[in-house]
Every structure is written in structure tokens, then in C-alpha cells.
Length: 126
Image 1 (cartoon, one colour):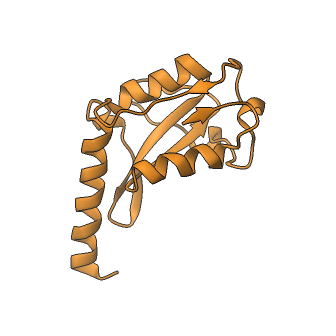
Image 2 (cartoon, one colour):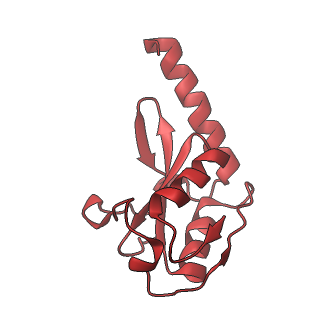
């Protein structure tokens, strides 16, 4: 995933969803404390450009390894690019912040989201 100042937040989100369809990322004005959620009041509009919402203006390729823990992913994003992100996982019909499972890998989170959606569809229909 290429990170630069001209990309929009939504472009990064779409690239992430292509790799992890049962996860999504949201961008926030401030980093969150490990184990705590991010406030919806601090959520950044997906229409903003990366350059308009960060202090560290490093450009580069951010390689996402699916064996990376969610907490590590969020921390690396902030340290390398000055962007505060929070991973969400599909849970039935809802999207939940992964705060209590930040030690799980992105692959584990995605599998859990997939199985949760399958169980929801089985119980309630599509």
C-alpha cells in the first residue's frame, strides 16, 4: 500500500478492504491507548487527503503482512506515517473496534469476521 500526501483516506481504506474483506480501518485525529477504543468525534472524513491530516509526511510503501498483530499494524502506521488508525471487524451486521483482540493477527481477525458473518446470515438470512 503506497502512502503519500495526495491520496485520500478512502483510497487507503479501499486497498485495506481488498486484502481483508471482513475488516476495515478508520482514521482518527489522535492515537488511541492500547486496549481502548477511539472516539467517533475524532474520526477523520474519508474524503480528506492524507497530507491534510498528518504531521509526519513520510511517503512510502506500507507492506501489510497478514500475520502482523492488529496492535502492531496500528502502531506501525502511526510511527511510519503519523496516521492514527483503528481496525474494525465485522460482527454480524455491526462493525466493532478490535480493542480487546489487538494481539490477534490481521488474518485471525479477518477469519473471525468471516465466520461471524456466515453465522449471522445462517440465522437471519442475507
